[in-house]
Each structure stands twice: as C-alpha cells, then as structure tokens.
Image (cartoon, rainbow, N blue to C red; front, side, top):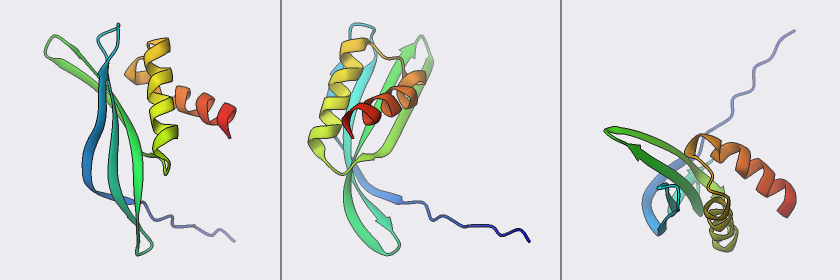
Length: 102
C-alpha cells in the first residue's frame, strides 16, 4: 500500500529587506524579514537573498524562511560575504552553516 504525505508550504507575506551589503565579487546579499503563515499560525521569519547581475542577466537565489532568529540570519550573511559565495551555492553554504551552528 502506498500513501502520499502532503506537506503544507509556508506562505510569505510582508517581505521587507532588513540589511543589504555588496561583496567584493559584486554579489548583493540581503537579510529579509517577513511574516509566514503555516497551518493557520502566523510567525516572523528571516531569510537570505543573494543576487548578481552580469550584464542584462540576473542570477538570484533566496531562502525565505532561513531562521526565526535575526542573529543567525545576519551571521550567515556575514559568512556569505566573507567567503564570496555565489548565488548558485547559497543552499550548500546554508547546509554547512546550519550543520556547524546547530
């Protein structure tokens, strides 16, 4: 017998930029804050965005609900800035960061 599990996704609302910094590799890193609704409950969450423009082409990756703690999100943004992480590698960097800090 096969069963399927349905997982609800958090819906982000009121997303704003908390902090924005540009690294040496011309990548813009942002810490965003927003409200997420999951299972009828509303909570504040902090996310990370990495964006780079190469001519007319934009490369952007984001993790909207990275942390419920602002300090953790800012520390992660500082790590991205320190190691010049490209937008395409933001998810790998997040796994490494969370593995070391949890």
